[in-house]
Image 1 (cartoon, rainbow, N blue to C red):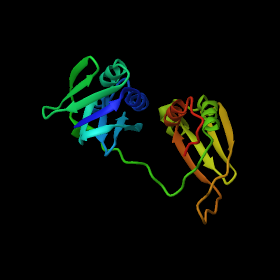
Image 2 (spheres, one colour):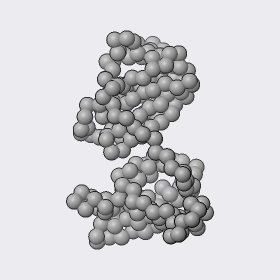
Image 3 (cartoon, one colour):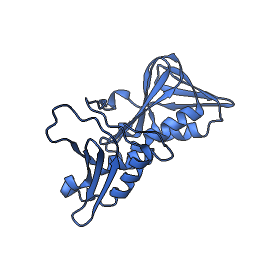
Length: 220
């Protein structure tokens, strides 16, 4: 595998995906960032077994392939690179050689086959929400979510999507928080209840809210 990428691009992507890494990973592979090449981009993936985050980064791909690199070490190394282009090549001995202006570093790759398969989440129905309002709503209900794993359902946030609004509800048995987001939503045809409902793990929505900081775009 061989690619060239701008440091600001890959640092942005690594900053997103490494949020999924646990301080105490259950498996060694969960310490890694999986890098897969596409025709003109890289797909970066990290997971802790519960949360998985992917990011696509523009790059000039010289040779396609995939590699699993120690995520924190690689991210720290990328942050220290001078602004501009960085060249990354993974050889047949599974060593990554990283070159940039005035720098030449190598590191051992991890076994990519140990990284779990991450299935893309897809569905027939999509909800579009204003980014800032969604981010604020998450922050205002997250405090009421339970941390007691013995009552698993209360560690999630109830999300109900209606035609004219979306509700977020968090509770732990003592506190209850509710937020309404006014937005037009297209519900599936023949939906007798007039809504889409799901309980989303609070930890996941918390990470989504953190990722949305500084963004004013809509989210799907």
